[in-house]
Length: 537
Image (cartoon, rainbow, N blue to C red):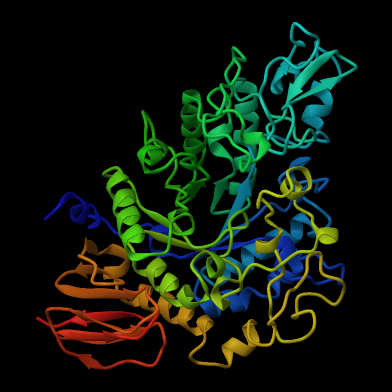
């Protein structure tokens, strides 16, 4: 038995976050309850029964904290309160209770790298050079020419340094100038953030997804970043330097250990993290001297080419990079990534879903993936994303994947009675929850059946994983537990194909939801079809 296969057989019962599928919700776009065109907690609460019907085990909720909303909640002015646009702290408490009553956990997005410039911490910090919170943020004297202290660049364009006239120093901001970076070298900052985590854990939150976790620390010598050797006219201007001294600093990993230690004070919690670097670095985010993330997020399925060779190679490379005690995680959609329906193509939405739920590890998908929601074009006059406003023309706009959820076939898709904050898009008649829920062979029903299958077949959560040699355009692998063997065959191609299984078996699920038959050693697959077959010895 090879190392990869051995690792997928746990000796103890699986924690809930290994058994459960996680569903990401971007709250502005999920359900509006008051007609202002922006999703809110009351709207989300009205859809909890849908989440239970679908079969998700946990919800990852993008930020709902108090915020000026320049970066739509990722510029936080109060970590321990809810912004009025979403509701109240009591609304969030009710949501936690409603989810828990249905066996669904809640994970909050947390943003440790920076705050809003309206946060009381920053207001105090910028008030004077000798304020006790001055060193809670990254301040520096002007450079020799009177300008910024060094050449660091903001991800939203221009210098990452903003001059403060009152104190005649610059503060660092990796993102918007209204998002000053916290100084994670300062133990007081780390202690304060630990208390933020404890505040929510005591309210019943089941864990966190840590935003931009790899950029917490900057070089304390403020050394210049070197030129990016791959920079050309097609590269966004903020990437003209290689972020050696601003990203992935080694001390950051120690800070993640401190966050994990806070979660370990509470039973049965989970820590997810947005990380940087390919499979070669993924192991660093699981464990060092102490544990780090339970689940360092993996976007391979959204970042790879959707052909059999690329998928097989990248899946193998990632799984081989997971440390012995690590647990894989797969993401099929995100508020920061192009929709899988666009990345893989509409004809592969179904096989992508089957791949997500049959690979070893925790599956994460994004609201709308389950109805095959594509990217929605956003006209220039309706652009909201800072990336597109400040770095236009490079395909960085995230608005198309943040458009509202479609609940029915009405003009505003059941999302709002007002004007939606982003366009709803076309093809509403087919691509909505109500229509697909009435169609037993829809993409929505496929997701539900896959979630049911994953819970019913323990081989898909606790079993071994064995890759098999691809046949033509068909990706093949096997999951097994206690002698029960499940063969997964996914036709990524646009033509029908027949593959050799070697054994007879029974189709327990097809992506087209119309096959439950015995099959021989030769398995016919239609274009874009995937099946799960229980093998017979």
